[in-house]
Structure formats: C-alpha cells, structure tokens
Image (cartoon, rainbow, N blue to C red):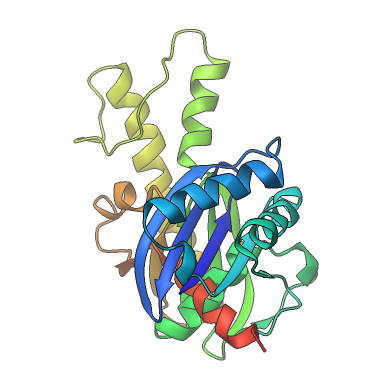
Length: 255
C-alpha cells in the first residue's frame, strides 16, 4: 500500500492507496510548530487504528509549506521506516513545465496538472478550491503553461468579518438566491456566487488564449459548494485529484 500526503497552507490531506484504489483519506491541520516526532506519532495512531501500519510500503509527500515537507519525510522515516519521495519541479512528470520560473510552482499544482493530464481529455483546466483558488492550465500537447491564483472562499469570508465592524463570521455554503434578504445571505451571495462569476469569466479568458474549449475539473474542499451553482461550466468534480496525481507520480519516480 502507498501513503500519499498533500500538505497545504491550512490543512494536510492524507490518502492510502491499495494499488489504484484510494481506500482511506484523512485530513488534519497543517502546523509548522509540530515536530517530526509529533507528526510521526500522529501517523502511527492513524495507521494503527485502521490496521494499516504493516501494509504501507511506500510514501510520497507534496507541500506548499517548505518547512513541513522535511518534517513529514523525517517523521515517515523515523516512525514508518520508509524513505518518502518528495514532489518538486525536478521530478519526472507526465507534463512539461512551461512557465517563466518552474521553481515557483507549488507541488500541489504540479500534482493537479499531472493528474489531469493522465485522467482527462486535454486541453484541461484544474480549479482547486483551497485556501487560495488556483487554476492550472494544461494545453493539448501536455504542456503546463501557467495558471491563476485568487483568494479562496474562506479568505474572502474572513476578510469581510475582520475588516468590517458589523459583518459576522459565517459558514461557507451556497445561497439560494443572488439577492440576499439579510446580512448572511448577502455575504454568501457576494462570496460564493461572486467567486463563481469570477471563475466563469476567467475560464472564458483562458479558453480564448488556448484557442479551444477545455475540460474543466474542480477539486479541493469547497468544490461541491461551487459545483452546484456554476451552470454546468464545471465538467467534473474530482475531490481527490491531487492525491491521485501523487499516487501516479510516485510510480513514475520511484526508480
């Protein structure tokens, strides 16, 4: 079995693959203050509780938090006795990185671009609804040509409540109508439906630059919230796309 770990700015996603089947997923907060021992004990507890500890034979880590990548690799080595692979722009990839500075590309975006190349018809655009909302664009020749980074839904909600005295914190969910009848519904309309309108507009602009229609794949924690309000602009919702990409990249790079 394979352990795949995607370390984000806010949360870390962990998946267990049995060959090509994703059999378990877990999520916990990303905390740069925790040591390799703390994360190692957490991994032991998760795997022991699910009777998986002795079955893990390999691991791969991607991280947008550089400090945590080495912490997790150390934890996996100390507590699971496995030397984990780490994903970077230097890894063997099914896509060609065609950006001005490949060093700047987040590992999660590399995993997403690789996954969409292997799983969907090209050209394709992956929209990842995480702390930030990111677009990763792969052209018809499997070139990862660039993307878009915008504030995510939670960032927008927190900013409204932080910088305005009367607006409350709120749970992110899709509103019933565009015209809000109270403060909460008005905020949700602006944040969720406004975000959706931005995405629709940016998809059109990206497709104009590509010169053709693209396959649009949504992933990330907030993708279901947007999917139901996007008027069929999003072709697929694939919440585990990043983990799938990591699994495939492990086998491409393990030698």
